[in-house]
Amino acid sequence: MPAVTISLEPPSQTAVIRLLELSDAYAASLYPAESNHMVDLASLEQPEVSFFVARRDDDVVGCCALVEAGDGTAEIKRMFVDPEARGLKVGKLLLEALEARARQLGCQAVRLETGIYQPEAIGLYRRAGYVERPPFGSYQPDPLSLFMEKAIRASA
Image (tube, rainbow, N blue to C red; front, side, top):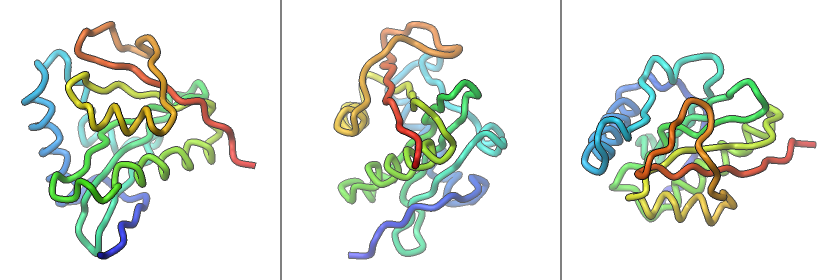
């Protein structure tokens, strides 16, 4: 089985845009618009964003972004794995790469918002040590959202 590789890449790639569109459609099938907190492609291209792409051979099979908040924390955005690649631990590999980047950047914590109807995502985050927390940043309480955080130790 070909190995999955993770690298920092620009989000403006046809295969990545396809994944983001799949992610949008999936979220729209589960939640009303006011409970979807997706960021657009232009937001993913900002300097405070580290965008990761997972590839199996040359095929893009997953992506995620780490968005620095400027206060010693960063947020996970647009984590998505192609349904055809589920079971390959792509999400775990993306999360590990993202956390390593957060350490390099000197972040003390990584935060996220996910929906309550995504048990696979919630399980991934819990297994990685993320714990529930109140809403952060500009988020408001939402019964369909789950907010989580993990303390990160800086790289030596």
